[in-house]
Amino acid sequence: YCKALEYFWKALQIRQQCFPANHPDLAESHREMGCAYCALRLESEALVHFEKRLEISKSYLPRDHPDLVHAHSDVAIAYHNIRHYSVA
Image 1 (spheres, rainbow, N blue to C red):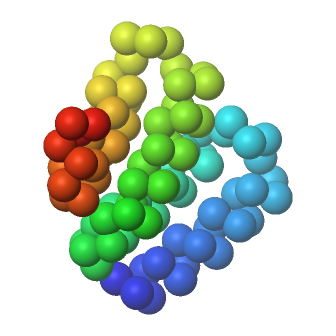
Image 2 (image 1 turned 30 degrees about the vertical axis):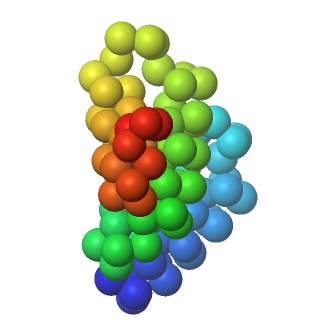
Image 3 (image 1 turned 90 degrees about the horizontal axis):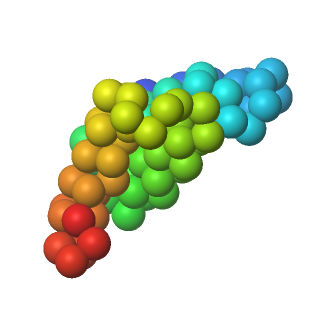
């Protein structure tokens, strides 16, 4: 997963240069990073990326879009894994 993170970071940097801050591809990069950090059990780092994904996704998706359910769920799971149960 460490090697995957290296490539996810590169992809994020490229996407940040090519797209506006609220582009769906940036949300996807943050989701990928969050998943990799979860796999490494670095939940606090994962949370940062899942929250960024949620923020970006909210900017372009309608409130009832299924992708927002997944984005909220990823944030909740990360909070649960770092034992912030009241927020999860």
